[in-house]
Image 1 (spheres, rainbow, N blue to C red):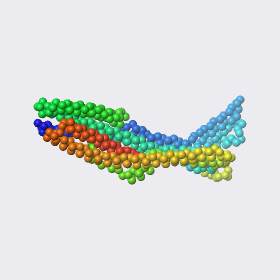
Image 2: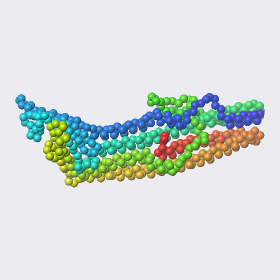
Image 3: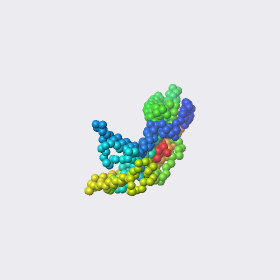
Image 4: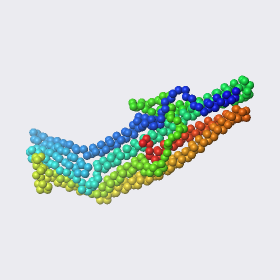
Length: 462
């Protein structure tokens, strides 16, 4: 009778039975879905649009400007004056401002300076800064900084996606771990139920003592209790994983109960190249963002440096009565308007203070950037070391599980020959299942550690 019972137990212990067909959600498919539809992934893509709009806004400073003025005075049937002016100004990225105007003034009390031919007067020319603003001015500085911000949004987008990637991978493998633990103890409960039934039958036939049925029953209750906790943990982790899943209509999704994760303990091909990871730190998204901020601060420093120069603004306009007359208008001979404005502060305290502050901001940001790189490299080394240690632990524990199973098999054979007790068999079996649960946890940590190594080096979904 004992041999028949033990043969059944061994068969059940080493076989896995599935009561229904299950759908497997693999990590790659999960991450593809998260990358495509998660709100954070959408936000990451929006950052690119923000950068493009920032550049468009800065380019708006170079938009041509149309203007018009009308100033008229009439008193006691006398037209004192009637000033009419219209024109266009076109700023350029070279720092030269092109201008074109038309003015037509009439009246009995015109300012002699405003007297023009009856048909009006056309003027076309340019204004240029020869001192402050020659190399860089406010508009060109804003455009440069906007372009730098646009480039930084790509790095910011990658940083956001990398963080989403790590969160998704961690949650997936925790879900897989809780599923593997639950299935392990479902097997343990099935095994214990059969053992309890066999011991009860042996007691009824007088082969074992009544206390053996109590031992088998308490073991069954203990495993049922642990299984209930693991089932609850699997439910919680399933809900947490569902929080990463959204559909095309930006609505949250729930996993179907028939969906299961890929096997936790399998022959994966995860491997890392420490040299490649260390090299990639130099283009880590966080460092790229800091580099763009430094470049933007340097543009501000150059602009502040321009304020140390005197303001020298030159304006020149050709004057003609008809538009076709510009072709025959020589420089500085006849029919032109010319002006030069020059001014400068004496002590330059505002300019020197602004420039010194801009340099201090660069030094502060550079120190922060260097510290950030050191922290990233330190973090990467820690993750690489954790990866190596966890790999060793997984190998060690796998061997330990193998040996614990051998001890359990030996204890079962001794029990079959009457040289052991049900208590010792249960103790061996508990060690096996506890070691399997620990191995599941280490296997999950190993896969999460791989993701953490990639994240520390600046990798993510790519």
